[in-house]
Length: 187
Length: 187
Image 1 (cartoon, rainbow over the protein chains, first blue to last red):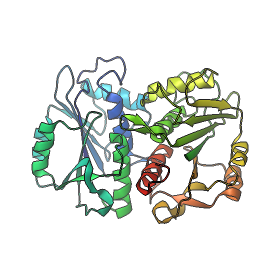
Image 2 (tube, each protein chain N blue to C red):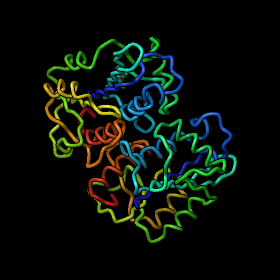
Image 3 (cartoon, rainbow over the protein chains, first blue to last red):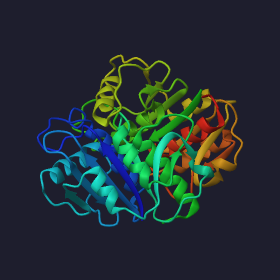
Image 4 (cartoon, rainbow over the protein chains, first blue to last red):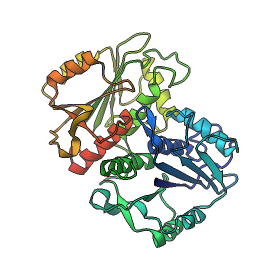
């Protein structure tokens, strides 16, 4: 499985929010779920997206989306947002799991895996060898906090860049998925 | 400028709709606006997205989004959807223009430009020379109608593929933008 970890500093950990955007940019989380798991007319079978929500009122919350187990999902933000609200509230949705893991706890679980940190100053992904079952770490609209980046760098193979400009986290995921598809990695 | 043309067979041409998805998949149009014009923390200055809406009740409608002129826009689907509804209703939004052009009328306007049609069986974009000011034509969730594809092929340079799998139109745009960014084309 290819895996992504998105750290959302402000994403709400309560289901009591008016809209996704004002809930600490949960719209970004929805966009990342969309770009992680969807192909045209089907769902990928090879992606895990872990989202760490560190916003109010009960951080941290870790939501793990396993694309091989997801069903009953539509690709639009509104539909994904409703699922997200339900999962945060503790209701069951196939393929979604909620836990109280922090970013560092999650990373400790992944010890021994090939970890890459997204960074515009990293090595170009096209010129990089990517090991099997890779994990890519992405920050939100603010980027990774220094402390968490430092912690992640201890176990990371390298920083990796997807292009010459700074992209949305969801766009980075699309580009990485495409690169791995091209290599036939975990396809 | 790099340019995209999205043909939405069912996208509503009336602002009277309950939600984006049930309005002939206007959520797809919003996702394509997002992937066309946004970089992290800024708006691209080099992209035009033309959307042809052929759904009820007043087709065709052509909405042209010029990223160099767009402001007051947020990247989430809900915010973009509100702008889309306003533009369909005839209200002004910076960077958005509405007309009654059909797909074929729009293409006739682009005569002489380098036109590429997205197709999974096309030539891999990475192995392809791309001329300046390229235009990429994308279908919606159903694909391009045969008639329109045939018409477009008369002026197209080639069919182009972005990878070994079938992707959402919005994901194709992200991948194409990234490829052009890497080449420094219309950057």
